[in-house]
Image (cartoon, rainbow over all chains, first blue to last red; front, side, top):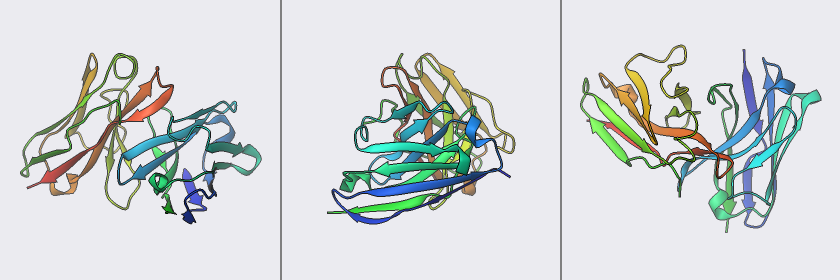
Length: 115
Length: 110
């Protein structure tokens, strides 16, 4: 069974940092593109970042320069290092993947950034 | 501000047909496939429609998708109370070099 489990969410002050982790199971992680998508009250669903199986990385304009996506294939793990956090980054962050669309999502990790 | 525009709300009574539009441009909908997601509060979003109009296994056939030019549509035929949720279109934008989601449409079953 394909499974994605996020961890690392929490409460942080504006300007602070947080690192999300996602452990994958049930598929060939090293051969799969992975993504982070967040749901915020203001914007709804928003694609945040993606990393290809070869390691190429992509970011949305709203997080470029502040967030870094990483993968550790030996541990079937995906990470999102979030620095210089802003109040508007508050939301639920999902780890996900899929070939024709995003058809496998984690349960989400709640990130709250206080002012 | 999302490059994909959706109406904020759509509504209907049980059994009715509801259509949700998604308007984009040549750099997104006009250049790549469109996907549709259903999002119920407190749960992970679910892929409803893939590659413009195909339903993944397990998605009821009352959900259908189409695309023409730089616009796409999701139709819910035979609306049910459990269809009350937020719906998002999504695609790849070649100018932004990023995946983009629509602004989202809340479907209300009256």
